[in-house]
Amino acid sequence: MMDIILGPPGTGKTTTLLNRVQKSLEDGVQPGRIAFVAFTRRAATEAITRACDKFSFKESDLPYFRTLHSLAFRSLGLSKAQVMDSKKTKEFGELMGIRISGYVSMDDGNVFGTSEGDRMLFMDNLARVRGITLLEQWQEDSDNLPWFSVDRVSRGLVEYKDANNLVDFTDMLSTFVARDNCPDLDLLVVDEAQDLSALQWRVVDKLREKSEQTITAGDDDQAIFRWAGADVDNFIGLPGAVTVLNQSYRVPRLVQDLANNVIGKVNNRRPKEWAPVPEDGTITWCRTTRELDFSTGQWLVLARNSYFLKDVEDMCRVGGFIYERSNGSRSMGASTIRAIRAWTTLSNGRTISRGDALEVYKRTSGVNHGFRKKLQDAGDVESFSLNFLRNDYGLVAEGIWHEALDRISLHDRAYLVAALRREEDLLGPPRIKLSTIHGSKGGECENVVLLTDMAPRTYREAQYTPDDEARVWYVALTRTQKSLFIVSNSTKYYFASLFH
Image (tube, rainbow, N blue to C red; front, side):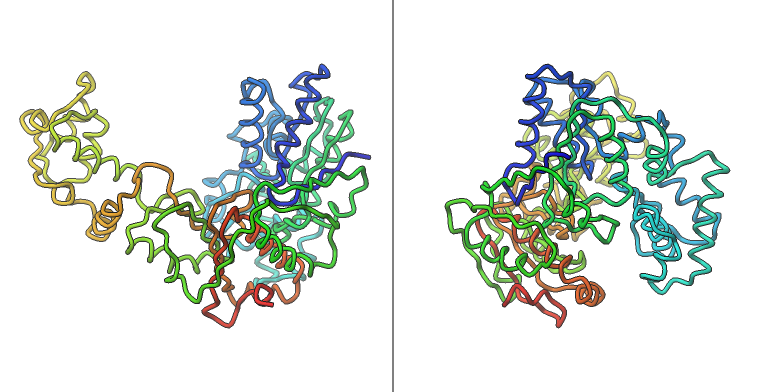
C-alpha cells in the first residue's frame, strides 16, 4: 500500500509533496535517503530547485531528486559516452540508409520528428516502454510503415548498440529493472505518476521494494501522454490511501465550470471535487485571433497542433510583440538585441564590453578587413568607446542601429523597430508565449488563448480515443489564472465539446 495524492490543477501538489519531504527531514531522515522522481526533467528541476531553496541544500545533497531515466543512469554507473545520444542516433540512420532527425528527448527517450526513420524508431521505443512486441505495436498503428522496414530498423538498432557498447534511454530503465541497483530509501516520492509508462511503473515498483514509505502523486484528468506510452489506467487502479487536494490557487470559477464540463465526459477516471479561486474570471469567445489585444499583460497562446500557431506568430511580428515559442526560443535572439543595445550605448557616448562590441561587429559590414579578429584578441582591454573602436579597431559603421547594423535582415529590423515603438522589454522574459497544449503542461498564465482547430489526423484519432482528447483540452483550459479567450475554428476539424 502507498499514499496517493490527487492534485487537480493549481492545487499545490509540488508544495504538498515538499511539505511531506520536510516532515521526513524533521523526523531525522537523511536527504540522501529520499528520492523524488518525476516524469519530466522540468518537473524534477522544479522539485530540486524548490527543495534547495526551502531547506538550504545543495543539489549534491539530493542525489535522487531526478527523472527516472536520470536515476537509472546514475544507479547503473553509466557514462555519457555509453548513451545513444542524438549524434549517434543520426549516425545510425546514415548507416541504415534512412533519414533520422537526430533529436532525442532526454525525458522519455523518445525520438521526435516526422521523417520515416523517426517514426520507425518511435514505434520501436513505444513497444518497449509499453511492454508489448514490436509486431503488436505495428499492428495497432502501422502509420503506413511497411513491417519489413520497421523490423529491419529495430534489429539494426540492437546490432548497432551491441557493436558500439551503447544503451538508449529505454535500455537504461530495462537494465535497472533487471539488476539490483536500487538505492536504500526511507521515502520515495513519485510525481506526475499519471504519465508513467508500463516500463516506468516497473522501475517505480523496483524502487518501492527498497523504500520504507512511498507517496505517489498525480492527476489522471491531466494524463495526456498515452501516445508516448503512458499508462493512466495503472494510476487510476492504484491501491492506497487517497488524499485529494481540493482547493485550486489558480483556476477561476467560470473556467472551472467549462473544464469540468469537458472532463466530465471521460468515462474512466478517479472522481474528485475541488474548489476554484474566489474570482469568477472571464471567458471571451473570439471569431478570429485578430480580436485579441496583446498590448498589456501576460499571455499563453495554446494550439492542439503547432502549425496553428503560425498566424499568431505572424500577428505578433507585425504588431511588434516579443514572444517565446514552446521550445524556449525567443522571437528575436538575445544576442541580436544585445548588439542593438550596445550600439545605442556607444551612440550615447558610453563604453561597452568587448563581448558587446563583438556582437556589434557580427552584425555590421562597417568594419575594415581584419579588425574583427583584432577585437577578438583584445583580451586585456575591458571597455570600448565609439571613438576607440573607430580609431583602433577599424569600425566605420555610422547612423542609428538599423542603419549601422546592416547585417540584421530587413524583416527582423522592421520587427524590432515595431517592438521598440511599443516599448517592449527586449531582454526581459517575453510577456507572450506560444505553445502546443502538450508543451504547456505544468504552466499557467493570467491570459490564456485557446485555438480550437485540430489537424485532420489528430481529429480522426480523437474519435477513437475521446477520453484522451478530453484530458488534453482539460489541461489547456486549466492553465488559466484570470481570463480565457477561445478562438473559433477556421477549419472543419475542431474540438466541438467546447461549444456544447
